[in-house]
Image (cartoon, rainbow, N blue to C red; front, top):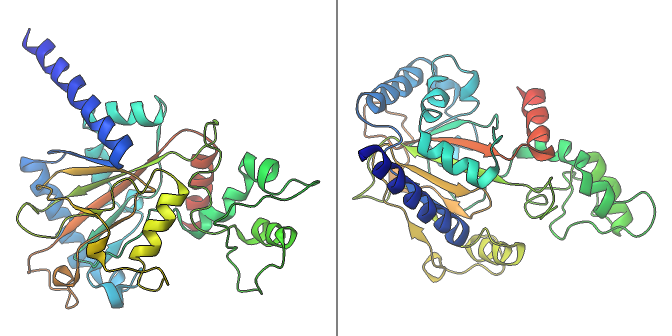
Length: 313
């Protein structure tokens, strides 16, 4: 009877989390890591940074953002344990199956961020993915068919320093050679087997119930390209449409130690501000550590991710 009651409670909680994911773009899954497991993972990060931290101080604009960025933890012996531990949570697996399908994949994009400033952005899959994404079915079928009019996506900005394309034909030529630019696959192929469905799971190793070291998100910014583009423009300090952050509704998530924030990768979000950043790289000071994992639907998008990470790894 007790086991049945726990199952009913889990199903109800899952429905609540899924509703939040669809409407607001995220939910918090409590205590994915806890107790001795959490302490073990914290210690693993501290040992790795003590031994190899200098290799990661200036990755991903570390000179401006502080702290450490550790990519590809699935290929680092001392940190592989993170993927094994996150895979143990049956609640998470159950929800990901609902969102992404029974055969969802863990994409090779697992990373750790320690005591860094986080600016507003969405989780793209880097330029290497953008190149392999040109093989996605809708690129040749809808964007740049070999004959007839070209219809490249509105966000297209090829990854080249060449002169801006004069027309859609030239844009397609540049895009097919260099990639069409970040975010072009966010809403492409919707309703087809090859639509992009990527979920980010960010697990926080420290408690942020009483501080601003957790994740901030712009709820609903994952829904469509129009809402997403408007949100990014308002929050981007270099945009002509920029407005003070306080004028754009956002949620500061006060996660507990070991909690996971599960969100649509298109959701506009940021990490903490300057007071959390560690520019001196002092391991003895209080740290803010988040391990992130990307899960995707088993389709051509995930295949392109695998190819890109294999090529760059």
